[in-house]
Image (cartoon, rainbow, N blue to C red; front, top):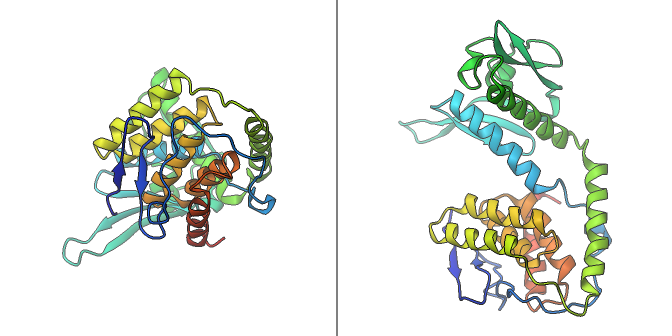
Length: 295
């Protein structure tokens, strides 16, 4: 991964300079903390299908990566929109090999159960010992308490349930089962964006959002990009109509190859500020990410 270069002044939200075609090469900069007024123009309606809300999806992915990483310490966990894989690097050849892969589209409902005083996972109500489920949906009977703990422990139950919920969210997204609800969320965002654009004076960013912005900037200085994303998305959960947060989250997601979320955030940014000086460059970057997604 190329390390991003950051341009920061006290009055600017951090702006990431990314490979061509980059916003910086086209004269664009990160949006200012005080947002200029914009006309009530919006991104074309055929671009409104943005995919799942990135905050919830990213949280689910992190839960799965953390749980599997704890169980399979010598493997790398890869969570993609369509699959989960355990991979390892061959020390002799340097080649990345896949130890196990689970197609999320085929994963049935995962639930938590108690078996011999331990929390285990059931797939569609059964102990499925196929290789993919054994490795990835979880080890079911084989040392199931090593990650979570004994039954009766509220923290262990919460951890096991969070893992099951995360798998169910990822598999539902892979099958497109969340599409109608997510389209409704985007439609609601568009309506709020129209109202926001019509305001002659935009509301100031709250201290709660500023706290997350400052946290993101500090994380970026330390090159902790995932932490920075978490802070931007936490700020956006408080204020979904924060253009700078969407822009910076989009650029970071793009740098981290999370193109689905980069598209989500950049569309939101353009929905809020379609006439921003960097809007044409931002739209070009959006098209580049869409191309990488095959849209």
